[in-house]
Image 1: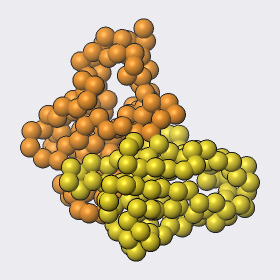
Image 2: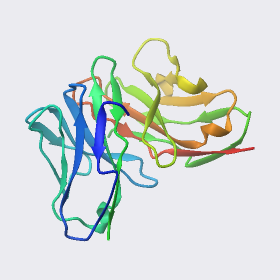
Image 3: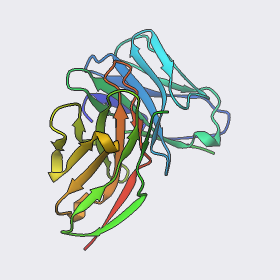
Image 4: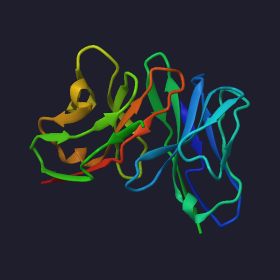
Length: 112
Length: 114
C-alpha cells in the first residue's frame, strides 16, 4: 500500500470521545476517499474529495467530518464516537493516469 | 440505483479445482469494473480491472474476469485454486469521471480445502 499512509492502525475509544483518523499520500493525487468496512456489507463510502478545499458526502456520512486543506492529507474526524462506528476504516486514492485505486492498510476502530 | 451484487457470501473449493466468483452490477453509465482481494487483517489488493476493449481481462495471481454487458456481469475466474487464494474477494464498480466514487459488493469469502 505504498503511497497511502493511515494512522493509527488500531484505536479503542469510549462512547462520546472524539478522534481523528489520519490519511496521507505522497503521490500528488487529487482524489481521496474514506470507506468503512463492516462484515457482510463490503466497503461503504463515507466522504470523498476531488481536490484541496473540495469535499463531498458518500453513502454513510453521518457522524463523520472531513476537510482537505492540502493535497497530501485527508483526515476523518469522529466528533462523538458511537458503538455503531466500530469498524475498519480505509483511505483510498485514485490514480487518474491508470484509473486505479490504492488503499491504505486500514484503521481498526472499536468504540466501547 | 447504482449497486453491485455478489450472490455468494461463502464459497468452498478444493485445492486445484476451478473457481468462479459472480458479480452483477447496476450502473447507469459505462462502468469501470474492479476485483479486489483481501487477506485476513490486511488491506485491499487490486486483482484486475476493466475499462474498455477486450472483455476478457487478465490479472495477477492467475485470475481473469469476463465483462458481459448484456448480463451486467463481471465474473472472476481461476482455473486452479491454490490454498493461498483463501481470502475475501470484492467486486467494485466506478465511474470514468473524476468523482471516482467506487461502489463495492458485499464480498465473497473463499475457503480452500486441502
